[in-house]
Image 1 (cartoon, rainbow, N blue to C red):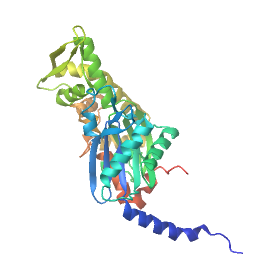
Image 2 (image 1 turned 90 degrees about the vertical axis):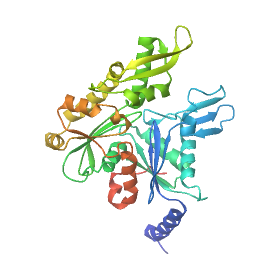
Image 3 (image 1 turned 90 degrees about the horizontal axis):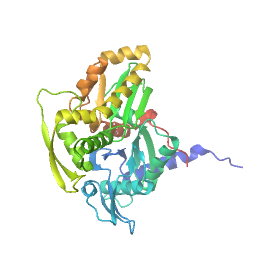
Image 4 (image 1 turned 30 degrees about the horizontal axis):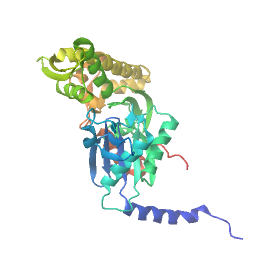
Length: 358
């Protein structure tokens, strides 16, 4: 009687993988709270859209995704809702996240009717097993053949060209929309890490709260984000800056315009900025002495949109006494690192989290 040999199935599986590979190009997805970026193997970054979906609440139909949906925030009628399906780096609305991922996969594979790509997705280092499984299942439901998970700080370190496989300590700080990921990496693994649910969104919220308290003016999310980008800072500048803000007067209910200085905005942003720096200090305090020496020599690498806040590297250098430098492409470090996991899959497979058994 013949015995079943599972190795007999290997060539068949390899052939099937190859066929499916022709039908759908492998993708890496930085599924961010603020923006979703997609990297396609052999092509690079092909998509960068806000993580926003506009839905008709009566029918459940998706009306717009990405930049078009973001323009609708705060401007929709009662039956249309502009939803941000990720909160603090994790999935808050599974169904909407699945629809958003499906849309992005279809955008990338427009000419491929049977696209079934392998997908590498970034997640915060502090998420639970349940939250990780939700990300995997959303990717599979959206049309992925297989879903692999990589922790954001590891992806950011790869994308920033840090020597992750060498026996030397490298520190990466990724300040995104929903979370701040801090990690010390050596020999291809994360030695120490922290995941703080604080990022660009909390900075926007801090600006809204400050303006409401100081000026009795209600701002929208997009206005707060724009002024943060325009004159926001974490460290005093030589030249002062001003910006006009338009919102609704909470006393009269009428539209009103005010002028705000960069010093006021710095005061508004102090709480979230201090929380982020404290998290970095805690990770440094918890780092083994040998690796601390390496970090003192090599410095701290910053990535993510939040790291572009004016004067943040200077403030961090002032508070820690360590060298601080921005990655070459801070907005793209995570997705580029995930993409390299696809380009050099055999070499970098060990940094991926094994997909759950189905």
